[in-house]
Length: 121
Image 1: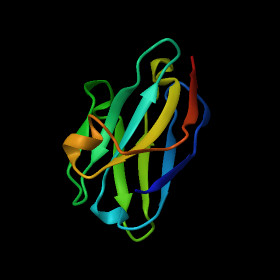
Image 2: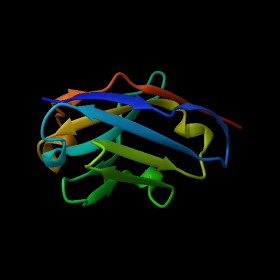
Image 3: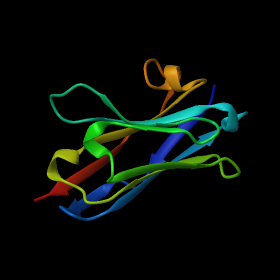
Image 4: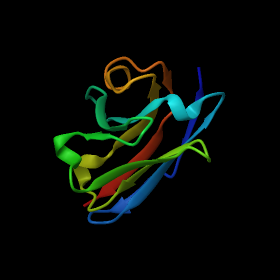
């Protein structure tokens, strides 16, 4: 199992950009599929984007064309570049890991503590 720590959240105006990072510790980061989830107040946690160990990606319809997930296996880090941010993107963003794309998008085995993203109108 790996441990995950997110960073990069903050306050940004609508239309702006942020890049979230998720640093992993532990063995074998490169074999894990990684994902980003978010949870807005009063709403369920939802998948935002995911990436396999070899770089195949999956995005929620609400962020396609605006967000990009990427990973650097040498640095054991996964990123979420968020552009054209909207107030409805406001949420706590969580990093997650799973051994396959199916698992990371349904039942991740590891979670980070979350980082707050607030988009003002």
